[in-house]
Image: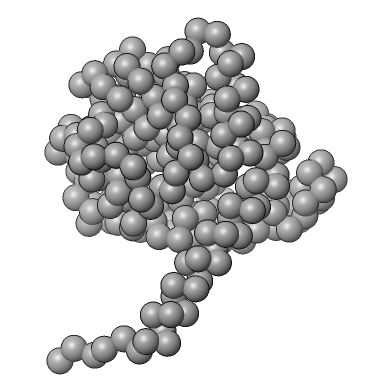
Length: 253
């Protein structure tokens, strides 16, 4: 027997999705000028290495067009543009201040001339089915209103044998072997990071949202299951940052 979902529940869900999208768009528009600086300080500049590895691990055999979802300031898009089998890169984001910074980065990278910027929503990609060979995204999943929706849209636009490469902060699993590191990282993430956000970006709220969004996010295993449920195969998990960050590679067969 099926039970109807109350109309009030549906409306509340729709309002939550709309409010979260507006909140995230405003947040990233606000912190855009200091985004790269804070990322570098928080990770000890390791985020650049992780992004390069994400692009490398997501290499596809077929030559074609690549898409970087939630491209932000464009560092992953630039790495994707350097790939030999990528003829064109579309750097997509829904926050114009981020895309303006991405344009500056692309302009400074004189060797890169194959990147196009596009203002659009990751949950409604403006592309036809089966048209891309590679899709990347970095630190975006926690900020969309539907991870399953993003996975579904990515699967739709990828060609068969196309790859989807994800870089994301995920909850650190505490074990008997890493209790001290887990405690130290949690203290750093929940106390030091918001302080740095307040001092360097004048925005404690944004950098308080960051650790909370990770605490409440899916584990790598849950993300793998979601990718497989969408239809992706050959899903690989690569932990980086001592398990604080995940690289996931999936293929559409």
